[in-house]
Image (tube, rainbow, N blue to C red; front, side):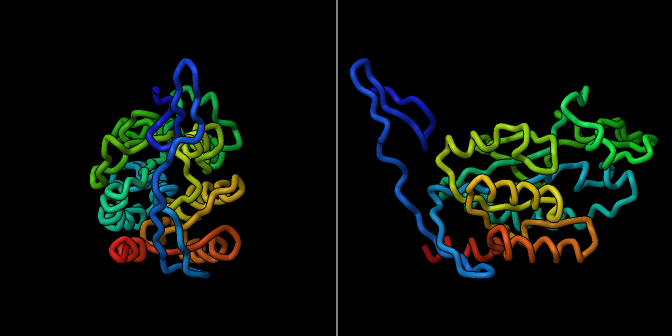
Length: 253
């Protein structure tokens, strides 16, 4: 028999037979302290999504820094992620880096989206060149679109480029998750009240179970935006927990 598919979701096939129901990964149940309730999930069907931990958002000389936004709050998830991600990888939990990576010609970006970041037409918006670095804002393979140096990306990790606030629109993210047999998503990254929140909302609408890890998430928006995002996630869209809760649950298991 030959395997068709990936290590989590596959068929076994021969000339005479197709086995569509091979034995899958054994369940790995852990229980997290979370709000509004404690949550038990199956690590064998869970992935970690890290959103937009990129130089343009999180580094000196990046886009936010260039336009006068204090980028330092966006760096808060770095240390918690560096503690958490190795532990998740050791449990075979896929780590997915979901990042802006626009086409150089911006042909899949609408005027409405361009206007959000360049309201006057004279500003440095998506695809614009930052004079100090020569980097095109959030353009695929640019310095600004690269993950910050302080975070370690392993060869086994999965990269997905996105082109909207939500990582599900016009991307292969949903197909990747379904082909990995994933039904539960842990979320971290920036900005919590924008790209993280909209991706999480769309995930819930698509039927995924969602847990935001609040110390692995941050925003450069005012504090009330963070508070509202956390409230709405645990009220309407899922659960709010932390990297410490995950690490504690892994230790207990």
